[in-house]
Length: 146
Length: 55
Image (cartoon, rainbow over all chains, first blue to last red; front, top):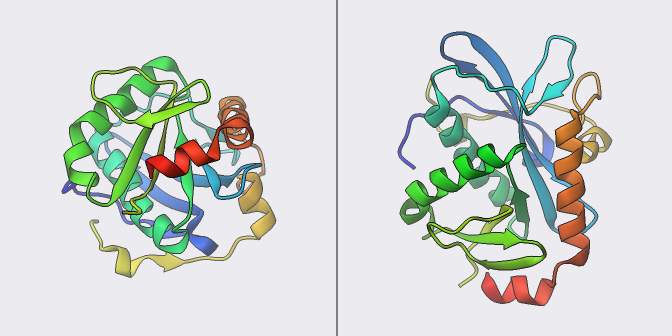
């Protein structure tokens, strides 16, 4: 992904990144790689930080910088996997339409990221290599092993 | 401002908060919790050998 991206601030172990989306307005955002019950499995969340400090991953910011925000998330992959090379990161949208948006972005960027990462599609408990034009419940990304 | 990853600054946060995915106020959103539940379900019940074979 050769898109411009935002300056990222990371926390210990590269599991949390902060950045500021600057479009029509300035919006504080956080990328979270949350530990799960399974070893090496993480949940990826992209949230807005609200004034009271709570998170919201449902708001449609419409800040005019979606591609730059998503490029920033992709950059966080690189740093996260440098620190956590065995990780398997699971992600889905907060709504079906947002999951479809992620699918469109993966479709578009697949050729650029596939040399470094493996992208899997998830339906139910079944994983398969990501296929363009197929709908999935969610996705998994991991460093390519071979 | 566009920057390279080499310039990323590091901050401190408690590992406990990171594990919980909580922020300054410690209040995750409802869908964030739901997605985490989905990820937990996958992490606990998916066939790891099948996943490893795909990586």
